[in-house]
Length: 413
Ligand SMILES: [Mn+2]
Image (cartoon, rainbow, N blue to C red; front, side, top):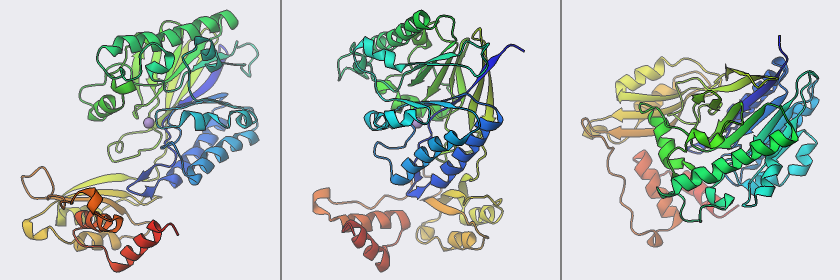
């Protein structure tokens, strides 16, 4: 057996994510506990997290606690595990990198942002020794989410325009190529892995989810950049940004890790995984997708009321409450009230499913009933807005105790 180094590639944790206000912190806590066990059982030496650690720029205290507790928990493992974290487009790069120094104590390195100065890019170049002394170790080019103008060759504001695609490829490609050259000079013959949080390659045309993310979130709104930007200097490219585990290219492997848990109903119904790599001394990489247990189901139920109620009655039990997105076909007289569906849910044993969406549509129409029209925003008080939105969603005005609760919250008490 040639000696190899085990590396785990993951991304897009989106800690602090919630579905219509329902926190997914428990799902994420379970994922991180599972990940820690996997690191032990598969003797992982290096963990790469390719961006979107948090769901938002100002993460909740709950999300931050998940993150720091996980990193601290790696300290008590029998063997040292190094962690490389890069900022994604959802992360506030500076905030993520602010605790850089204390995180060194838990063997974690955070790269938040790259500046226009090519000399500074070398901070993203990290070298790790292997446990097995006969293995040369690995160099990681930990490139975070980067707008091409950060790198200095595309003017701000030009991003997203078709003519800037080529310049973005030159700027970002130049960064990867420079890092590979510097790494070769400093650490000759060490296998190199590149990280990135961006859209590269073309999505499969049948994959609506990928196309959606490509068109909405490409680097600066660009379509996928060419895979040529990574050059020939890396034996593996560990990507984040697109929430599906797939290979953009196979030689060398350029892979998205995908989100470890299904975040919304569009991500549900397919496996979610982390990518385990065996990196040999000569840079040969084998990969294995290790499926992440999903303790919660996210289901979309469609049909008429009685069909949906029957589907609810037959739901398989799960560890955490199933999240239901209900798309009900209704007749005109059924537009108000959900009592049969709510009763079907209430009849189930704990943990009962939670309805996070309920859309009603008349047969043959693609859209639900018109949302309630709102006067200009400046003429509406927050409470009126809340009441109208509640009514639009639930087909009835909010009960008094909900209005009371809203007043308490908006008064900041
Ligand atoms: Mn993401």
